Length: 340
Image (cartoon, rainbow, N blue to C red; front, side, top):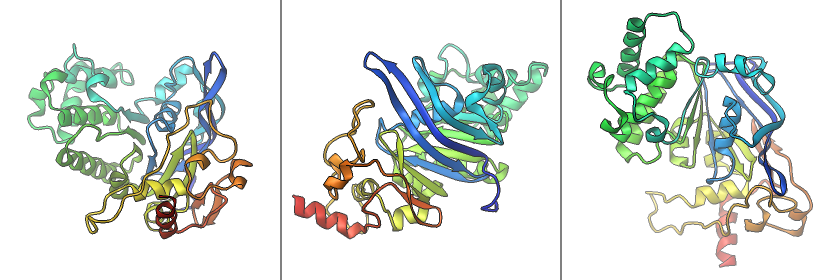
């Protein structure tokens, strides 16, 4: 177990990633602060468009044009990635920091075998190793992610594999160089429930065996509950709540987090009325004044329009960006029913 005083493997400080538009620069990630400890899993949750994936691309140095990191630091093992030359960043990307992207069918090149693609990923960081040795390591990586008959699958093309198997290939490719940090962006999207469980079990087992840290990006709170040690909830480019996973589920303190949890059906009470978060996420560049969530918030008051609150400390490692915190889950249910 890592000491809470140990320096984090990854520390993101005041990160702001912007895109140039005809109306000026807009921020997709706007002042994010998070840390990831060695051997731990941080879950990042929120609606589509809240900035989760752009945050991961910022860490990887893969922000698409016309985007750029405007300010902030991304400190990985004591080195600020945001200020690194591209050549140095390439030596870290794939070797010490790896990423599993959302859609394995579009991430894998359809005209090359999966084995060739894994070997090429390793060759970037190990160009002098003979092909035969790299091939053996690639087959071992496929076996590690529990792909049956890995030697035969090495020569398969992506379209010849199921969705779950393609996702395992992506994980094998990401883990081929034994990274210290794995960023998994929606790793269970479009997979059936059984395959989802298998993929998550695989990640847990590999983390236990290797001690790597994981950043798990998802909109699925059930996945977060089973995988994460800590959780950061994002909304409109910012982190609005950050806490250990037990606190997020047992003592949520931001109205957005309450709404996300309240919209999840629970097996133990099938008749419980689900909450609805009215409205939609504001597009980048059109965020409202004050708290970004206040137009959709059942607790919203005039005071919420006057300031964009920071993360207020609510306990050990628990912060929420809400001037009404602390709040209780039953209050959210009651207020929503009164509004209806």
